[in-house]
Length: 330
Image (cartoon, rainbow, N blue to C red):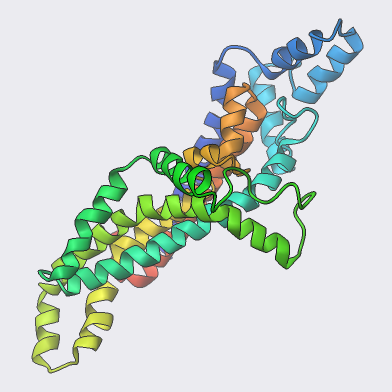
């Protein structure tokens, strides 16, 4: 119980620090959302004082409020689920924009991360079990693919499969000429899978090498342990030694790494989503930074922070259940 209480206290403190930094950092940058939006509106003519006052109230740019009052208001808005108004797509609330982009990122990057983990750990366990054979030859090729930048692989796939062969679409998450928007139909699901194939393949190819190499090395180290020798001396079948004794223990570091990878799924693959113009959180965050949309930046960063902390907290609890030594060493 002491282990879990410490974990909860640590993550609660970390969350408060992250929320505070999320409040302070945009205010240290030059400019503010009110000035940016006012400048855009003034391009079409003069803006009346009444409209300027309305903008101040909507964007929280009241000059009479101090920093501490702004901070308490910010915390109160967070508790109510109010992340502010987006300047880029004014007057759309930030929560609506994040809610529209989050499912696309979870579907694309989440599925690709799970596939990469399963393939990497499975092939890595096999390569470690069959070390010194021809299976080890897959390690250099996957390591080379891992070293290639995401955006370069994405651009190469677009050039070969989309531009040259015209097998897959270049941009988008579905066929906008056939569907007016997301809908529940098999035709729409097929269109989504068709558009997501190349971005998902880019993520899998660029990340599977790390899982494979890490699992292979852990398998080699695990197979040299005394309990593996004891299991072999008892006459246990090789299949049981492989699955029960070797893979189970060698996979613990990979499981911890998988938890961290899942945490960053919410952040999306920024470059991949931008290259394919995929409407996920990664592309949304790049647009927010490009347009100095501070409210949207704060909202996206907060979502990423919450996802990372939640995933790490869950993995800490799971690790404590899998390995009792973690609970007693804390």
